[in-house]
Length: 84
Image (cartoon, one colour):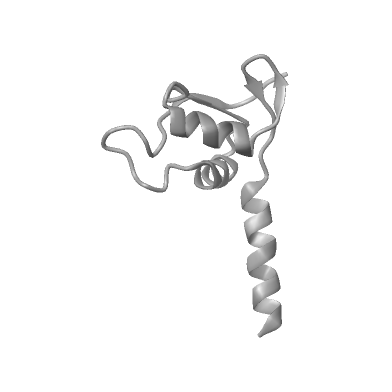
């Protein structure tokens, strides 16, 4: 099984990174670029670790499942547009 991965993504908690380096933005950009698997080296930062645990589902030790946060945001935006 072939896949495209980036195992070294920094979060918004790393020095000299954008404030948008959060889970929804990482998910969205990975999908746009065709990246199937994303790894982060910032998992030791307590705030980032909490965000990861809240947003992702554990598949096995150290492996977390698919996130669809951006899909949820898109649906909310679509609902808001439909109201107008």
